Picture: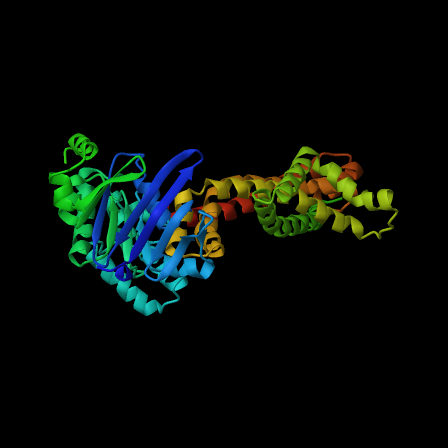
Amino acid sequence: MSTEQAVLRLENIKKSFGDNEVLHDISLTVHPGEVVAIIGASGGGKSTLLRCATLLEQIDAGEIHYGDVAVATTGASGKASYGKADVLRQAKAKFGLVFQNYNLFPHYRVLKNIMDAPICVQKRDKVEVERQARDLIKKMGLEGNEDKVPCELSGGQQQRVAIARALCLNPEILFFDEPTSALDPELTIEVLKVIRQLAAEHMTMVIVTHEMSFARDVADRIIFMDKGVIVEEGPAAEVINNPKHQRTREFLATYGG
Amino acid sequence: MDITTMLGMLCEGLLVSAQIFCVALLGSLPLGVLVALGRMSKFKPLALLMRLYISVMRGTPLMLQLLAINFGPFYLFGIQLDSEWKFTATYIAFILNYAAYFGEIYRSGIQSIPRGQHEAANVLGYTRAQTFMKIVLPQVIKRILPAMSNEVITLVKDTSLAFVLTIPEMMSVSKSLAAREAGMMPYVFAGVIYWCFNFVVEWVLNRVEKKLDYYHD
């Protein structure tokens, strides 16, 4: 596959917090329909990578491209420079992010949580948005909860609302930042089921997760990150079942992958 | 003097008190937003200026501020002002004083909203203004309502301080009535009326609180 087709292209990303270099020269390309799982111990830079890709953090050096939209580029100065506001807006329309803690808007009912951004940000027609929102609610198995507020829902239900909220903006790529880390095993299953279904529909996704068997089953490609670098990367089954690097083997042993 | 006349006079005073209350509230509620935003500004001189302003407003008696604003223009700059000025001075003093308190309450509310709410709104593409108006502010209002209720009720009682500028509000009226009658009854009536006024204020604020009780976070 050529790079022209890539939904997301991260090149040589560097990111430090003070003296602590969290991302050391990370490159990652995601193609349409691909599901990429990022695994690794806490503090390895997985979440920071996701936060940089979703523009919640600024990179120090490197390049971020969404399709043909150049979000951040690095010239001869070696310092990353970001595009103007309208470029960032274009890029933001291309991705969605599902947070570990859902971050639903507590004062909005479920339907409004899902519909508000498509109407207020994308300026789409209310009737059309509502039709899509109700379809998504059905798909997420949330029928009957349209008029509830988030605090009336379980964590698993809240996370599924958050997924519907992200999907309703029709993103080209969806990021998940440890989507089940705040959930107990039973609720984890219902959220993973939804993500599996999206994978089966060839939704392009990048998932940071600690669920190794899930990553193996659902991802096309697995990336193992440690101390700010990509240690190992390859087809899912290969990385999980037959890791090449010592560090990957150690990690998978502790996680019982 | 019969009780009806006395109550009639006190109610006239009450109207003046209520007017000070309303003008002070209408002025200080929005001004407080600017104070809070200024206080949180990344532009250091503005933030420092706001801190100083808040510190002075909270650190000196409101009665002194009333006197300063009323007499300051004459004693400092020799400006002659007409007899209506004392009303304007009262409004200015109350608005400036309460905006400082409201500003700090707003700030506590704004800063208590989790970062995740801003980040979620950011990723969904909301502008900063949309994020503040649609996501942050409604949640702030719910959170600060109890603290605001305290201030609003205090404001009802603080209107009585306007008596130092001989504004004919209810406290001044009851004072002169008490002097004329050589008795405590006018004060008793005034106290009951203040309490009734605040009873209404409490009722309204409780209604708002109930209305926002449909969710918690």
